[in-house]
Length: 309
Image (cartoon, rainbow, N blue to C red):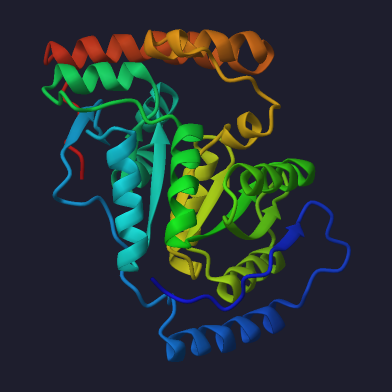
């Protein structure tokens, strides 16, 4: 495992930038840091980006390749990638992500080029098992985050939190440090609710180059977080990026997690809908119905869904 330039925790709030840095100054500093990283043998942008591991089977769910893994196997793959110095991004994908991929071919390509696409939701698990993948199991984003953080203490992996509001990321870091004594959260960034400016992008790249985290946790929403990871992974001196959506809010108590019986029976969406009806009712009504319709077409071979690329 690589060494790290810094272990002190750094926080940045991009939501209120009154005096943005000069882009040229940020890039110049970033280039100096990157040169030092290469000389020291630390994480470098020159390392090959790893796409879907060829040895891991995938279920074809409407043209999206969902890896036939469970929580333990998913955590093993991420851990192996960090230890090996590989670079890639992980998508936690359920019905919402699958249906977004039907409407957006670029997004489908992003999913299919991920290091790992894990089944977040029982419908994706059921489809995988129907296709013969008996060991596939649900990998819920907050559960993956907790398991990876637990393992990272002994491995001394470092973490970076990107997403949420300033109070959310700071509370999340505090909770992680309390739940997993010894965990190293080296930095946080709260992005604005808009695309990053040129100055903000340069500042993000400079900060990550200085901290070289093993794992960047991205707490945005689908498909925003997947587009962010695909765009910035080649530009950030980090190991693995993992998009975990609502995990930031769940691990800070802003959203209540569903009971286990609802998770196992595929009814967690009802629990989420109860908590956020105005935001989620249309998504679930449209996506769930369309998902079932397309599954019938795929199963009956009425419509051919392009093989995973």
